[in-house]
Length: 178
Image (tube, rainbow, N blue to C red; front, side):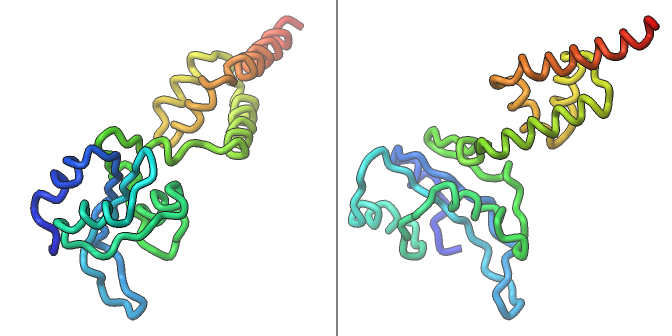
């Protein structure tokens, strides 16, 4: 309520990439009272930027004192309380990128999560006798929440998944010939 109505225009005019959290309108204080609805924003510069310049940018916004971010990934995860299950969970798709900021880049899969997803995919193919790659890809696309599976399936893992599916097909067809 303290920010001017055109606060997004003010930030866009900087031509800096910036991210906007969902409206935090369900946050509560430790005593259980509701916090005032607010947004979190994160500015991203291509090079060093002085505290004086940041203060010039945010002064017209009437916001709190800016804080340097130690981890941009951690900050964007905080936008939705991803690592704070005791707090209200805001939807990831409500984070908005401005001036070319790519929200998805802050949620890229780690090598460990890619390996675990690949294991889940292989187990799914085996347990469900999936014998067609196109059917599997359509499953990944159509099932809500399988965007990570689709990404792993099409990004450098096509051969391994195809070989697994071929193995299922061969197993099923060699059993019917006997």
